[in-house]
Length: 216
Image (cartoon, rainbow, N blue to C red):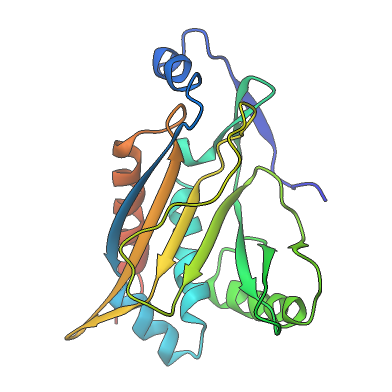
């Protein structure tokens, strides 16, 4: 299955990240992880009021924010840096037998549309016996949710591969209720040849802005 998003090559020679890219590209393990949290109270209340899945809602908000950040659209393919025109997400779904399934969710602009389509995908995948469902290429964010326990961050499993494309890896933990606030623990892993901590800061700023749009 192919992505519907186009891509363009970013010439490495003369690129503002040329030296940084060349440096971190030599690392056998080039990913770095940041563990933090986001106040999603407005989004949580909106989702509850409209009967929407909270997990689908915060994943949608994350993809929406990432699509506006240049460095989250970059990938490494055949030694070249490419920029995708958009992103979907792939997340783990727990099947009826308590085994995970990596599942593609196409991005849709409206939260309600995304949650409706997502609920149908989840219902189908829960009955599936397949480990991979739908597109699993590079125009994605890789996501997983650990909703059962207090969360201080996570490290993702991956192969040490010099051809790794640098797909961002995002993990979520159990929601924390702090008085009137609803706090989402989040872990963000990025390929250091493509992004730095500053770009996580930009993502979190945009994610907070997306969440605030749902304020009553």
